[in-house]
Image (cartoon, rainbow, N blue to C red; front, side, top):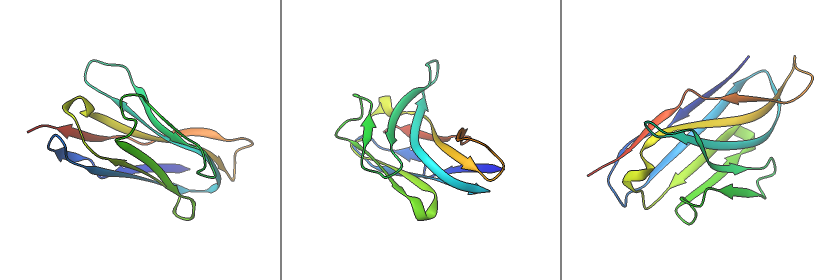
Length: 122
């Protein structure tokens, strides 16, 4: 099976930075898109950023453009989210997702991590 494990969450001050990482492990043949979502208390889960398999195309929510950067290391099956100029409204649980083809599957499927909490507060 496949596991996605996030790390890097925690407490940051407004204006500060955090870097999230998410690594996939298991019987993986290939990974297409990777992305980060977040869910704040009482709100729906929303897309933060996504990146295509080659890394050439990225997409960001308007609320994080210019502050967050998504990147990936295909050799390590890892996606990153560099978060700068953090604001209190960025407080949420952040989830990574990847579209993965495993050795027992016939097509790519979406997998999710369990989430990592990011709190932005002074």
